[in-house]
Image 1 (spheres, rainbow, N blue to C red):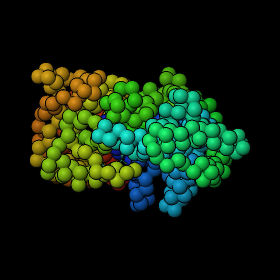
Image 2 (cartoon, rainbow, N blue to C red):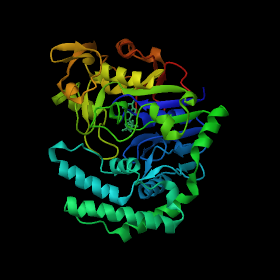
Image 3 (cartoon, rainbow, N blue to C red):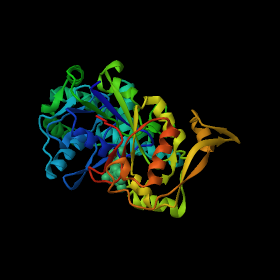
Image 4 (cartoon, rainbow, N blue to C red):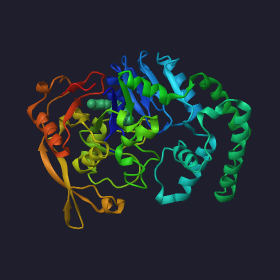
Length: 428
Ligand code: GDP
């Protein structure tokens, strides 16, 4: 099977960008199928650190065709800024970028409405990235969305934009008492971006399906993580799209039977950004040590991430939802300094032990982790390139996570550098 799906197995930020970039070296095509510019993939390219938000991570490899699929929501202005920013880092975006005509657009009024709504939620705010992603997906479902293919011809786009923007201004002013959006100015910004993006517009699903049929290596790059899936994550503290492997079918226009192998990416510990339950969250000095060693701050927002221990219950849930054929563990090196490493093997909810991830977020909020302590190795794993190079206790830790999640470990990442990877099996 020539398709390979990479899915975040936790709450996002698992280091998928680095792994996609690593795999993209061998991929003919890299496809984003959900999410928007709220994703932030940090990758090391030729000695520099580059952050991608909307561009597929494979964009740094000129030989790979990069597709922004119909399941993604696109902020045209943010995409143009990103294209210019990566150009400054020496990555030229040309005919290798294809934007699906059916991808929905994030418009300035989405961001304005989102900011007003998060403010109105007060203490119950979701902790979104304020990139307009949620409102854009909401408009898609309520049949008021504009799509990338609508950007041209400009006259028709203007008419549609003005109609929806006027309605959103009613919401902003009457419901939230917020200032209205300057529709003319907002439109001008989008139109400038539209002119830049027009050459990239395409009907992408036939191209992706054709590549799969031809046996090309196609990488489907997930954004965010399984526990943020709108259907199976910790609702309502979730993102607005399907982040599990199921999202590939509707988000890229590929039949499930053609998707291929699925790899989960999980940190060797856990982090979470934003609000919502996080059973294995660490506190005090240990949390700070993980945060410092792992540089755990959001690539999109700069927010410090909440840090904690590996949660095997959660990753097993993700594995079952997406059918992981392999697991890539990242940031093992962050744990190099710890004397002992707690691993969550089950939860206790209202005094009852369970190894199933609860469907109710309220139940999850009451879940107490059942920890098992793994011995630390207190030696550097950064230079390891083969399983045998790892200290014994580190290898035991990896094997323990493998058995707890019931997914074979395909690779372990041991540093931010592009090639700081230990492959356990041939992954693409
Ligand atoms: P993504 O959204 O899933 O791609 O994750 P992020 O980009 O938010 O997080 C990845 C961060 O961790 C980036 O700064 C990477 O350079 C870094 N990183 C990735 N893998 C490793 C690793 O194995 N060890 C260390 N120390 N850093 C890593």
